[in-house]
Length: 501
Image 1 (cartoon, rainbow, N blue to C red):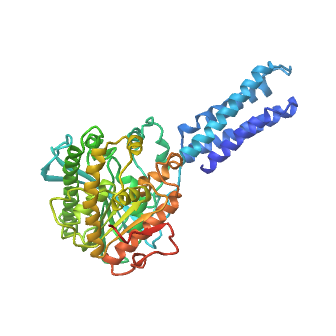
Image 2: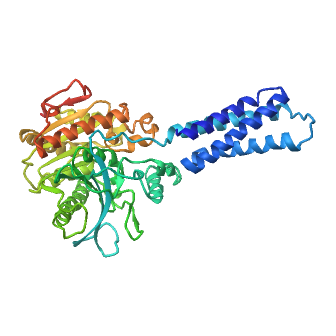
Image 3: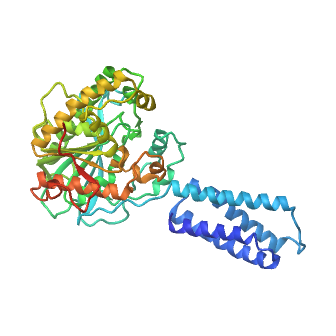
């Protein structure tokens, strides 16, 4: 809760307590004083912190109590009026329920603070719009008919001025984000008050002449915004990080002309498809996503040479390029790493695609998995099969799981090959799939429902950022690499997978 939200909630609780004081004279003065203070807190809150739908009850209660107090003191004749006991009890019960509900809403939907970047450099950010004239859009309509991308860049910056950029700058996006999680459109509107740690359009830092480039890929139906904390942290340590919104594979992407596209690719992963059809669909989508990475890298080459105007001109170290991604974005990172321009990559909890039409990746690659995903891989390693009861519980079939197992065996072989090239396979205890994105900060209810793991979001973020930075430093800057040597007492939840078969 923000400061004036706390004061407003506290004043409302005091008003409730005063309603139980039976001395009419004392209560009349105290109610006027407290409701007046609460109204001042309300005005300052609205002006400084901004309106929140989760606080509607407090707004109404504070204004109502002020009005009743003024009427009681200045207008109503000094005659004692007594309401029936039932009405008094019901009224107070309603207020108690309203305050409890408001407290729950504030807990479930907090205006949270992002973890501060751990590097010494300030962070700048800007958004780029790219149009690929060589590729037709196959998942929806665009203004040109060609594949269009929005890419947000975080980079080392000179000392910024003014306020930090908002986490999600357009409130329209928040409506689509709420719908993506099956919630009413207004649910996440408070996130417009969440601030990042980056300055919009700041000048590039002069600490180095150029900085390694890292291309990042969100998961299916996710968004570039949900990798803000990871991008900011890398940028603060001297990297240019470009997170790609893969058009029609995000919950919402807004283009400069105001168009907003949403995901049209969810049906590709419907459990109603048979496995082989879904696998082909996934490979088809994956080919487009991998093409997005290659195209984005083409554009940064043009930016570096000055053919596309940008203050990043001449500041991108294209000799040291990395890539990472989450879920299908992690699979995209692996697939894109076959590009000879990309030196190294990281896959966060993403099953691979397009495994059968190429040889294994011959360069360092890091796999960091959630504990739940690793357990599935371990079943394959141990040749364990689901029981009929387990299949019923997860809503799957024997044929489906047999085909998944076949692909996972090939995936494990690819992972083993990357370890031979200097990579690693890790998993983090008490994590779930969404601990690898900033969605874990949005609401503690996700943890309670098991959508994210038992690990605290701040701890999960800290661990992931530490290992990601160490790996990229090792291969893109020829420094660090300490965490890649094996278990570290500072991170006991990180487990190295030493045997994949």
